Amino acid sequence: MSESDLPVPSIPNARDAVRALRPSQIREVANAGFGVADVLPFWFGESDRVTPAFIRDAASAALTAGATFYTHNLGIAPLRAALADYVSELHGATSPDHIAVTSAGVNALMLAAQLVVGAGDRVVAITPLWPNLVEIPKILGAHVDTVALGYGERGWQLDLEQLLAALTPDTKMLLINSPNNPTGWVMSRDEQRAVLAHCRSHGIWIVADEVYERLYYSDADSGARGAHSRTAPSFLDLAARDERVICVNSFSKAWLMTGWRLGWIVAPASLMDDLGKLVEYNTSCAPAFVQQAGVAAVQQGERFTQELVLDLKASRDHLVRALSTVPGVDVKAPLGAMYLFFSMPGASRSLELCKAMVREVGLGVAPGSAFGQEGEGFVRWCYACDTARLDAGVERLKRFLAQHGAH
Image (cartoon, rainbow, N blue to C red; front, side, top):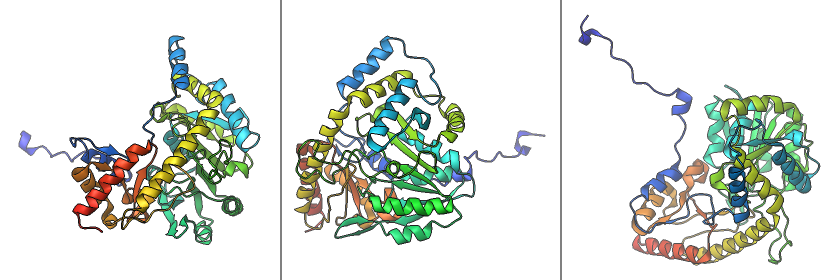
């Protein structure tokens, strides 16, 4: 048999569920900025400030002391204990037996999904939503249905009855991100109470992504330190620790540790042995020296976090005022997170719009379509930076709209 007679091999591809995942449009816009001089990037969800020195110093000390070995799958005992104390102070009694340390918040979300969702299961998610949350269950072969927030005079709001109607007995898991990325919407205590009761009656798991819980501005109008609520409403305030509620959190937002990749899960103790297996087969453990930095963040970082929230609220209010002067922009101040999700001329094709703004005026914001079809018509602007940078961005936005005849 000659070589020409050999069968032509098929093109190797990933499995269908993976190939069907939507790529990140935020990254697509950021990639469009490569090679463009002087881009102002507001597209990613992180501050322009570095991690506080006391956290970096703790990691350096741990490295110097040789903290470079494997740890327990669920995290080092000092960090689990510190997190249990932290969660207890904010949300009621929680023991280390309900805490698992993870290699980032997004890893925690994957682990939570792997714990309870399999092929063919039905998942419900509230959207617009950070795409990782919607796509993770699809990797596992699950089907995701969405319930969209509505936008109006009061900003983004949930139709509670629509959500409850979607949570049918065949639903395996509900995904809620509150405070929400991208909209800044915050689920109220009464809404949480109604959803928890409904999910209890149908045996539905709630996976609550609460990574922005400390970035909450409900009662901060006075600007006085300590005058505002320390945390957004949480399912941990209502649910017993051993029912079908898994809360996911991260060190990235409250302590500016995005690049450290450290998170945690609060979950029923009955899940921990199986969760430990999943951690072993995903990452084995979070790095020891990063976990030591996490201990410092939790135990020493409260004053820093409260000051950060006041700074973010000031930046939010500054940007809302500035954008409100731009013709065609409709923007509302959200209760939480670090983003404004607003409409503007051209946003009905938000991906094309955002790429054009990068190319033409060096302004980088995220397209609303990155957060699902429910986000089309809007763009997301991360305001976790100084006000001078925000002002420069607004001026570029005005220039772009003027160049395109928007008045």
